[in-house]
Length: 116
Length: 114
Image (tube, rainbow over all chains, first blue to last red; front, side, top):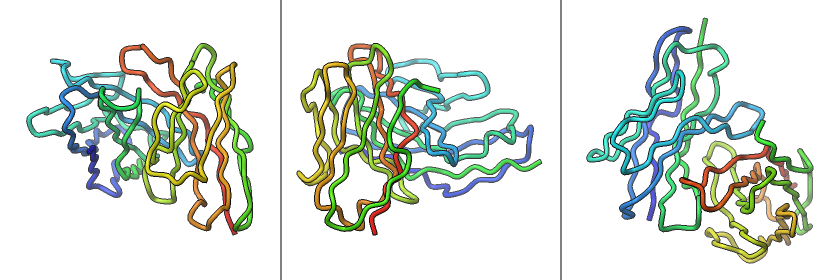
């Protein structure tokens, strides 16, 4: 069984500040991928960043970085220099290698609001 | 934009009716997955199609069915609609065999069942 837990229903951050969105996961699969998606009010899921379970280094993509702590089963998303356009729902997801190819299991999301 | 398109964008149906949602995958992608996202929830996996065959299914009843066509586009059919079927339906396409089978999502279809 796979489970993603996002404990922060909402987060607020001032423009240009950094923010961390929490994600913990549970899986029995030894090999998996962790993803973060952004969902604006329009509904489309926008891929942000990926971390493989065997990757030694934390993933980074521009202003996004993933703080991966495998032993603690956490995969927090860090957004640096927040922008007003970052306001959206953010979902953490896991994709075990042994399951249906690429199938994603999502958390309930965190609503991020960036204020000026 | 991902190149994945879905139609229609919005749909209103009544209980007991049937609905067909459509998805056109990104060029070169051979796999399509469908997700249901109820209000305030994360997306839930419905099923996946690979090379026109169902390749895995989530915890959804048989009245949720699908098709994939030779051009890799796909349909999601829901029979005997229930009020709880009201949700955003997301289609995602991917290319099986890539490193992590990244899924590219379409804009979704918002279904309201009255």
